Every structure is written in structure tokens, then in C-alpha cells.
Length: 190
Ligand code: AMP
Image (cartoon, rainbow, N blue to C red; front, side, top):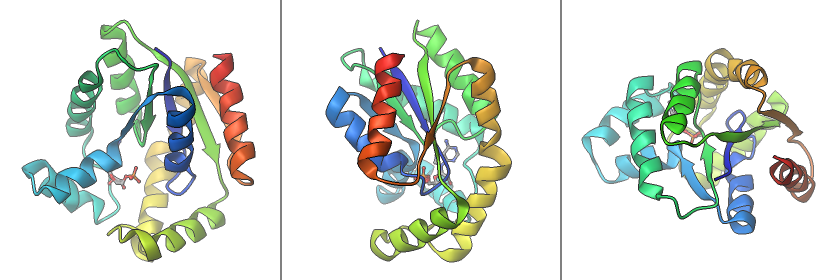
């Protein structure tokens, strides 16, 4: 099992690069944002709770997210080459819980791959995506809030993963193929 955390601000290209990684390596994919949007679409209690946070650009409480993650991970079974965690962890307690959850199963994180993209580019990409995605949180006001949440609550994870020895920095601005090649270089090395 080669489990990978794909990390970056909203709009940094995590979803796009995850798709390429799935195709090339046969990894499973856990996007916590997709899991939550699916719950909202199905009108579940969890979806109702999630929507109240997502629409404000806030994070869902850690305790709830950690439970969801463990059950989705266990749903994959052992028949994958590894799992890509996309949009999780987003806080230090989530990173600690992920490490513990994997250790309990004899697994680990092989690499945390940070896609580094400048702020003005993130905003432009998200506004552009909002025109097509219909996502309730891809509007200018919520985008600004999500980027603030990223800086305050999520970016400290870079230091956490550096201390963990699994952090890899990738220049996330530029050609899609070059960015993917840089990611593959990390995955093949770890
Ligand atoms: P994403 O699709 O990853 O951009 O996630 C969309 C929204 O879902 C976020 O702005 C949060 O409100 C919520 N969300 C997704 N993943 C998490 C997480 N790991 N912890 C807390 N909230 C999350």
C-alpha cells in the first residue's frame, strides 16, 4: 500500500492531479469534499449538517470528519495499490487521527505532496470553476473565506508533515504534464 496525501489550497489542482494518478497507478481516491457533496445530494442528516458549514466556507468539525474518513477507507478493502487522500487532512488533529487510523491497520502515508500555487492564481481558478461547476461554495465571498481557512487552519500541516518526514513540495503553477511528472517522480521514489 502506497498511501498518498495530495495537499494544497482550494483550486491548487488536487482533483485534476488525483485523476491522473488514479489512471496511472490504480490508486483508490478519497475526496472528502466529494463524499460530503454526495451526502448533500442524497439529503442525508450528515449532508444537512455538512451543507451548513460548506456554504459558509467553514470546515466540518474534526470529530465528524475523522469518523467519516475511517469508514470510507475501510470500505476500500486491501485490493488497491494505495489510496489518495484529497482534501483530508485539513487540520492538525485530522493529520494525527489519520496517522493513528492507518497505524492501527498496519498502514502509513508514503508521501504528502504539496501543490504550491500563488494566491491570485487560486482565486482566478476558483472564480472560473464556479462558472461551470455550480458549486455553492465557488462564489467570490465564500472563496475568500475558504482561502482564509486554508491559511489559518490547513497550511500549518506543511510544517507538521515536514516534521513527519513525508512532505514533498511541488511547484503547482504551470503545465499540467510537468506538474504530473513531478508528482510521479515523488511517487516512484517513495
Ligand atoms: P473540497 O471539495 O475539498 O474543496 O471541500 C469542500 C468543502 O467541504 C470544504 O470547504 C469544507 O467545508 C468541507 N470539507 C472537505 N474536506 C474537509 C475536511 N477534511 N475537514 C473539514 N471540512 C472539509
